[in-house]
Length: 420
Image 1 (tube, rainbow, N blue to C red):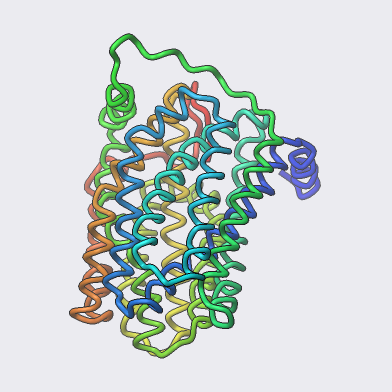
Image 2: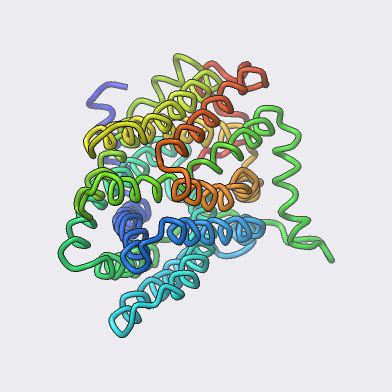
């Protein structure tokens, strides 16, 4: 496609009110999430001084998302998606708004142990539902471009947000940053309320059919597909290593390197540059190497980068390595998401997405708790060296599985509906 054709296609997307409202709402929401991405670990660290408690809060959030994943895809396939999205946004607004309100009266770490799991649960339902929305807002030929715009806006928000959150936290404390996150969820709900989406009506469940039985349709699809089956196994290990990585990097910069809250924000913002670069490069790289080589190589390099983080001195090299890790994990993540979209029939998209996320996130909460506990006991360098080595070995194991024979470029399967 020429530059002029691309510009025309982009303009056509902006002329679609539903998509424009979704894009604006999700950009605001992502900006708010990027504030909490920095502010919540800092809030726990300020209140307790404990990296173990940082990991515990993160692990609880991951566990809640894992449990919710059992039924979030079923909800997305059975109920009005627009109302479901609005309800999730309003619930997260109320939960995050409670943190600065309570903290203004008395710092209460216990509140984070209650808020984060609930917010993660609503976030999981929102994310799975969100996957199914884009095809109802744009024609089939514009879905890929629409998803690219949404992912790019998300990356830009996380590029700007952590640095701003670090500055706000350094000057006013972490709670105003969390208050900003709450406000963005309210704004997102307003934007989604303006959307009139075209969504297919799913067939009603059979009599006495349990929610788990409906969910298991997604599990069965994954189990029967050789590439998705092995991808789920490998990602279960990789995800267990990555969920707590942000907490360890925050702890490393603050505790080992003596950085300020603002420096933490800049380090994490630099990491998001890697994600943004991945969104621009992934189609070309996957088209040239194919899915298997792209996924294996990206995650193997990410493992090397993770291992090196604890050994370099100063925030600048840590930021550079974080960018490399985020670049590689995003390349692998976007590629695996695209493959799932291409091979999954549209009527199963919500349940397969829910099942895929739930299964490969199974060890993530334990991994986050274990990673942060190990960092506190054995040090960041030794912990990340072991984690990085395991990540690289896991990725290279993919060469012994059907992943090595996966597509040599993105193709859409008949009857599938690509989405986020």
